[in-house]
Image (cartoon, rainbow, N blue to C red; front, side):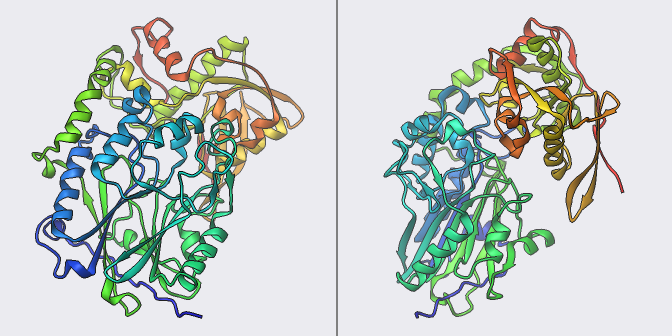
Length: 516
């Protein structure tokens, strides 16, 4: 059996000069991997003034000019989250990635948001090599577009790349991935990595993953790393973790021991293009104790001033439609409300309850996923575009009759992540056990849930279909739904409904309480 080589590393922040000025000492024998994840259609800088594809391109160009061997890879969810995707369905993001010269990419769960047929049509224009190790697309429109791995020969070494994807069940709407067959990710990743090292003689295996760092109850990057033998680096996505090697926590999270007691480098850049990841591997020292250097480069105003003409042409072509929606003013707030703000979650949940009452002539409670809120609302005026950005998915409000026993199962799932959006007539408590929440009690209108009683729930169709692992809702009976997408319902609420002329406000108190 061929003795496999290993990469060992120590996380170190290199500094801006090392990143963007001054060539590597021996660029012929250095591989630089630049990586992104969860950009979520952030074509221009966000309201925090971070990110933007022009700035990122300036950094990428600088690093390519300084180094001979540079690969640019993406770990999924390049789409969904701004009006560029809402209006143009992924077309803009593909053009941008092609101009940037993305070498390899994998799918995130949001690539499926408009359905697998739409995804296939969009990916026909993608010039990047597309990887998926544990998805079988043979019975889908994506057949033939993806490879299970890629081997790149660089500086006399063979570097293999995998594409590891999450189980779509419970996170992607079933209608959006028809025909796709999922293979358990840890087993498939390990089997493929072993074969690549033993049969193909590769010197290192790098996994591009979209499974999250440490998701509750599911295998993520941390589980993959600690249960592997032949994977050297994991470039992750999905959970929006910013793993910064310049912090104690980031350094610790990026150094994980595999089954052989050897270190695996695990990296992730956060979301919305706010950071670009950079890994440097000395090819001569593979298997000899070589230590790749890893850093995060913040994409901020330092990189303004250099404009890529191709990118600007794309932005100029599509931006008028975006600007139009962003200036259709429909409401106001008395303060800024971040996406994770309790007041915004409460408003959203209470709105679902209120709208549910009009659909079905009365509901007992509402459940709304806080993950469905993707951006903040600004202080002062907000526009139709702000609302669509806030709830960008093609979801609608669904009414479901659910047995109390199944509803308790749903609350158990919500408690495991320390709560989710519920209407104001709900009180829930949970206890932290091993870092995860365990449901203690839940009351609706001051009364405990009766397992034998049927409750009428207003929710989102994504959750009603078992999304966010709320499978208890799928055991209920669907009795009605809105005739509009959620963002259209909300826009109507502010333009001509009960919210017209009112300042958006809601309770700031959490409806989930942690107890000892």
